[in-house]
Length: 197
Image (cartoon, rainbow, N blue to C red; front, side):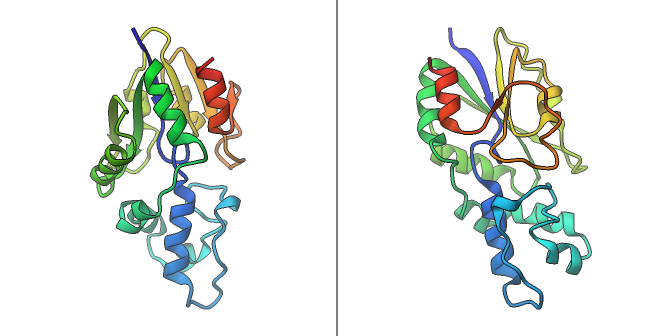
């Protein structure tokens, strides 16, 4: 029987930051004070450091960012992290692969359709929608199956579940991923070596 492997989606499987920066750059490129957003310098969920014009010019900057996640352009520009797609395809041979992702109402169905198109071998998709926007709702998925494994980019999500093995996906340093004291992986080749020995 296959072990359950839970994978986060945004900023774990796909480079959501790069897609958000593309929308920001296209939106604000003609504004005074515009500096192109560089996703490699992303540090905070609200994109405070790299997308400052959202916070300076928009009345509800957090809602603008949430809206970005639901736009067609976001999904059109969404890219896998290097080796993620191929590694996940191999993982489905050994594990029951479950994508467990938080979503906003405006992007949930589009996210499912994107996953279905690009990762057709995934066994299950769990979408958690916290309408308050506070996030960290993955504690609602206990992950208590024998030897369940969970990989996520946010320590709060990892701490909130009962998975037997938890790994922080830390592609780069951010304001929110420094509090994890467990195992860390930084790319999909590492995940492949770790889980497909």
